[in-house]
Amino acid sequence: MALIQYMLRSFLLLLGFFGVVLNSHAQTPLRACGGDSTWPPMSYLNPKDKSVQGFSIEVLKAIFETPPRVQLRPWARCLAEVENMQGSDILISAFKTPEREAKFLFSRPYFSLTPAYFYAKHKFSTPPISQKSDLARYKICSLHGAAISYSGLSNEQIESGATNYVSLFKKIERGHCDIVVDMEEVFLGFDHLGTVNFAAKEFEIRPLPDTERFPLHFAVSLTHPQAHRIIEQINRGIASIQKNGRLKQLQDRFQAQRR
Image (cartoon, rainbow, N blue to C red; front, side):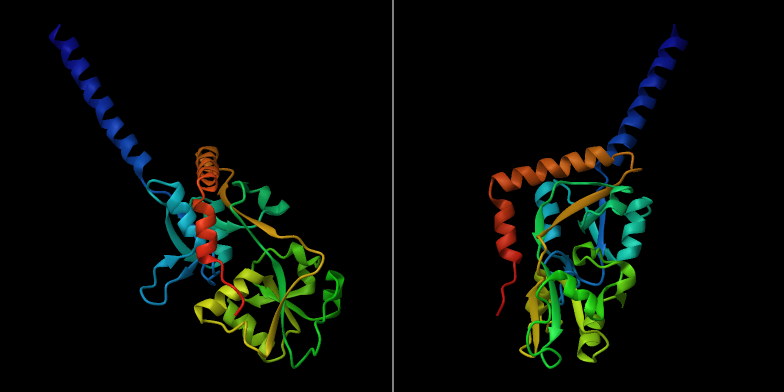
């Protein structure tokens, strides 16, 4: 009888131990990553304290009681980290593409961006693009690793060696590229931060014709054991802050306007 009681106590202690371990694991904050090329207004480093800030970060804070820890990485590395669960669980500010859908589970959209192009006025006295197909006539540049399907061009038709927006800006300044394609909100976000002067008078930002706004998502690797649970929690959170008006407040707060 004493042996049975001893074994029962030992079993209960063991259950308690595993309960503590599992509970501790469940409370471990998720990890998220975005591109370190800086992508305002979605994610960027605060110039003063180097903290990661931006619209996508605030959406995560509004969704999770314990917000994921967000780090900015080279975009290709961030994608690989989330895909392989090596240091990051959630991909922030992601466009959905067929290639990515084969690797990631995506949340519902929480924002959308405007495809745009950027050029120097000394090179073009009038806007050079009247329809999207006009892009094929020029040397086009974009950020390395960026999803550019909205341009209608293949990867081979776009020079994508630049790993940050300062380099992209210099390519236009020095005439290495005719046109840069990206998102209007990003161009304006850099100008708002004062880090890259995309909205200077000698340059022009224009919406790309024949395109629609591109939705932004969070994403988790399809092989992540908690992928569906995480995405379901994010989807519920997005729906909740959309309903109570918090999402609109954040959009208004971070949406840079043309000067």
